[in-house]
Image (tube, helix red, strand yellow):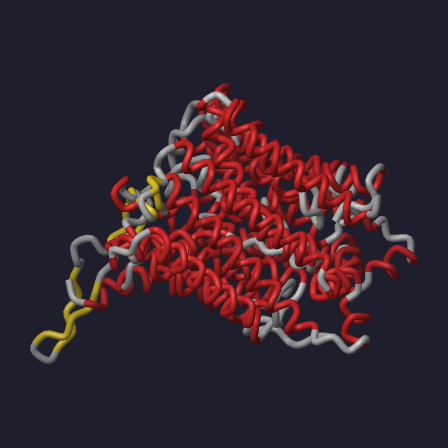
Length: 314
Length: 308
């Protein structure tokens, strides 16, 4: 079997499994999995920048929130239906990502991390500042009537699961395609050795900027879908914590792997879900996980699998 | 009250902010300068200092001054010890790689914050100031062609606030003397200048790193002990000092101590004055954008000199 066939089989198998699980899972886990798939899209978007291009951003909540508020504002202020609202979210994400990329990519390494962190913080504060429109911390609910898409009620659990699944499948396929394309290979080359990529004649800045826009748009898609499917838009999703989460998920699952973000999100979601039954200080788990991962498993779960067993994993 | 007394009052409050901010930011700047790593958990060391100050003051009892004096000594030392342990168990093992250090210190941030939440709880608790005399400040008015002195209502400060400013000044001078005049300061500067050469000359670089990291955290904790009689100790109080220290360190030029102090005074004072006229959220938005743009267009800081 060629590597390509193995890749198709493995990822196709996962998608088939997720589609099948829909019919057997109890309601609670059914809802969780829908949430995890949307959040995994966020992590996959993050992974395009962090895992494949080697750009560590600490401000991805800005894109997630841009998508969420782009969608939410279209519904709230313009009375848009879900499909155009979703597109509004994507456009908001792409524009914000292009603007941030054009500025932040002038810096590198630690400065890049701080610049992204600061822009995201400014975005979060802006959401609070324009509280009369965004409703700030309190947020707003997207009513069931506003979540009807072409006669399909997105607040219904089964429809919601399918919508999350379709988004997840599309993004997974897009990522797989991207990383196998010549463009994706250049991104990896930039991650491995930026100087050499530049010497070979690639326009590094342009490649990075496109990576930021793709990453930001995918994160925005996750944000818009999250708001739409679960019916709530709030400032929490723009806070630092939501910039740290995708980093954590990708690190745990394995940076620079197509499956890593989903696996990482799945594990961390249930870890935090279980621990929040025991204590209100559930972010402790996230902290310990971050330290332990940096110390002992910088490659993450799928990264370890790739370096030990399946060398062909994309 | 006319506008003049308002501004005086705001600058007095701003001076207290600036003093505490200078201490915190110098700690962050020291760590960045010597170790070339960004410590995202710095704000949590600040918070830990305040919480430990409450704990020490509360368990010592007696006159407030006794508890406060004990806290002033014990809390920074304890926090420094915790930071040294974090440095030796985590940062040393990832070899101070800049990016991995940021991720690891984010982890440490959540660990410290959440352990505090589990043990100390979600309440904000005060520490009694050792002394707290209200000092009214006179204001001059120009009435009918001659000066008149009067005491506007509300224009006052406390002896404690003034002593916070003085104490911060003394500590900063102490840090500067240590860096400029002592053996350990010399070793730190040598490490900052060139780690490899310092190592080749037999300087125990890893021990210097541990000391610097401990000192940075200790300074943040000290700042927190000084401010805790004015603010209260709370497990989420580390966010603002972290953000402001970042702003100060970046605007002052990464790793430059005089620049850091200057920027702290500037930011502290303007924060006090700006929040009289604008909403604090807007002030924060402008400040964060300023930091990002300074890093993008003038990475050496507003007062920094371009190196390399």
